[in-house]
Length: 470
Ligand code: B12
Ligand code: SF4
Image (cartoon, rainbow, N blue to C red):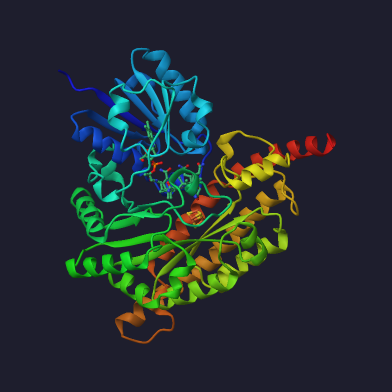
């Protein structure tokens, strides 16, 4: 009997995103599902348009089952592909799962054979075997993440070109930020792999990749401190030759001993959702974090030599021009290493979406623009066009040539001072990786400069119509 051929497709959103060129990373869902199917005798391929570097031509694809996945921003592209595949290959099945499908299953119902809501490791074989007849299939939350198979990364076309190795060791988040879709899809219960299992995941990935920089995709990697403590002990004991970065919350700063241990185990960068320096806004987001927590976290992480990628969001009802400008100054004064200034995006299924939608403030639902770079709703204190303009000015100021040049000089002094064992103040801060990222960010921002200009014109028109209709 010939093996059934299954192709997973992760499409790339139609509108450019700062990440697309800079971070060509796959979602791990298709990797887990693909590995389960492969281990059960299926012929599996995972295609990611961002990693491949171009849009897939459906004429080049042949499979018994096509499995599409998408974020909200790539949903439109997934729709196009679904339509093309169904038309070209009426004998093949087309499935659609992932974040957007889980949030809005009805949107795809007439385009594909099945829409899958939520996690699918426990049901993927039955789905592929055709054991479900209903259009929308509800997945089940994976109870024991240690029982997942070790990922076969070679199923992903172009894996060898990815210089950051993705690993995800937990699902769900006990917090309830009103803009976030994580709890909606993965739940509020924090489910996690054991330290021993994470070590096995790392060793498995390290065997398959020539790169040594790992990214723990976990939304809140250090949510369970005991687990990370033990993991770091194991990593240190094993003398793993890797460096890593992870997404954490500011509360990690409350445990300096743990930070120290994480650094010894290879931690180099943390990504933190600071969101805002305004306590009112943080409260409105239900972020359970204050400006003081942010300041403390920066101080202590820097003290231990950890680089910080700080993520901020603009567009809350409390936000205005002054706030945004103060945020850039805050980031510069506090020496945050790299930043992302995003625009608040009400993703369907989130509390903020429900509120803005019920107030009639969402001015379009073209998912192409739902990538945190565009304004899609009527903001309160600062109009959408101005918000875009201020966000890009914030980027320009943070990643200014002057600051990058100064950073280069400090880096040179740092290298020289290390060579002569001088005690150069704050020497850990001026690292070559920070400099590279700053330069890369500068180039990326330049590249996308025209994009918001085009969009500003578009929203100016929408705004005018909105106010005229009032
Ligand atoms: C890693 C990551 C990234 C990486 C890579 C992303 C990529 N390839 O798209 C980077 C850093 C580049 C990134 C960027 C962005 N991200 Co991001 N990211 C994540 C993160 C942390 C993990 C993704 C992951 O692997 N999940 C774990 C696996 C297990 O889940 P999964 O892939 O969805 O698969 C499971 C199910 O969904 C289902 N399934 C999935 N596909 C299919 C298909 C079929 C056929 C079936 C049956 C089942 C199925 O089964 C799988 C196994 O159970 C998620 C948060 C999260 N917890 O998911 C945010 C998340 C996906 N990101 C998000 C966002 C908003 C973004 C950005 C727009 C902005 C930003 N955060 O700065 C950009 C956009 C990038 C883009 N693609 O255009 C949002 C998406 C919200 C939405 N409605 O779209 C999320 C959910 C975070 C959040 N707080 O809400 N991101
Ligand atoms: S933003 Fe982070 S902390 Fe808040 S609910 Fe989402 S994953 Fe949890």
